[in-house]
Amino acid sequence: LSSSSPAGGGGDGPDPRSDEARSSLSDFYARHSVDRDAERDHGTLLGLTDRVLGWNDKVNLVSRKDCTASVVYHRHVLPSAALLPLVLERAPDGGGRTEVADVGTGGGFPGLPLALLSGDSARFTLVDSVRKKLAAVGDMASELDADNVRVHCGRAEEMSRTRDGEPVRDHYQRYDVVLGRSVTSPARFCAWIADLLKPDTGRLVYIVGGDLDPVVEDGVQLDVPLDELLGRVRGTSDKRALVFNASDVRRIAAESGEAENVVRSGPGRR
Image (tube, rainbow, N blue to C red; front, side, top):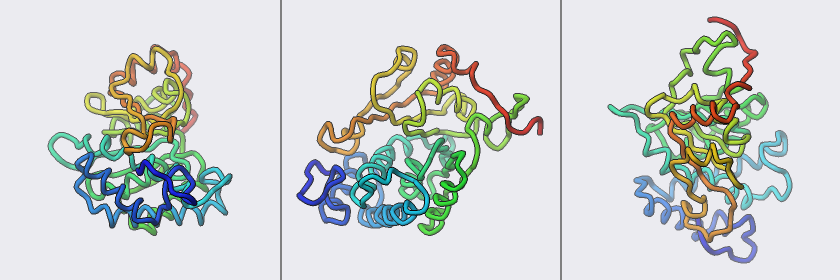
């Protein structure tokens, strides 16, 4: 969040426990009109950082190269938190909680930091096919009292439909927001998650770097660098957040040909 990086900070920012890191979270909230206690949330994010470090010795949640508190905080936790304004703005019509799915969550990013900062306003389903990672993520969520988190072990494309093509009631067109962080190409990701989104109001928020194929670029509703969301110096990260409407997700999946490549091998009719 801060544009400066004092000596010894490393990890693309100041010491996560410093006053500077704490105040920069407050500045982020003020910039995006987030009505939350920044000091308390900063402590929560530090708690998550510590738990990721502890679990990473047992399960490879994030790269073990240079895995320090500063790296985890500035390269994983804060870039996830950067999406908070994009998630909170998707409150469903008529009230109620925003339903969010984080597909390919891995070590819990970006979904777990966002769940910790969203409280009762949203419920997060964290999805991954690697059971041991989800066990760690579920444990961290429990220790941090994230009652708005549930985990789902499996492939995203098999959440919404059976292998016979029948909709799965618990997940088919149930989500206001689907999240992903460089899981695969944007077009392939669209094909995997198209049936999870509410057809009229759902949105995909995807963190990615690099150039986009024209079929993807044509459907982007918002393309914003994470550094801009966080108020950091440009170039701190090469990643950006893309936002797509559900209709464009379906179009991209179809026009790219990726929809035809989706294979479901899970349970049949139920």
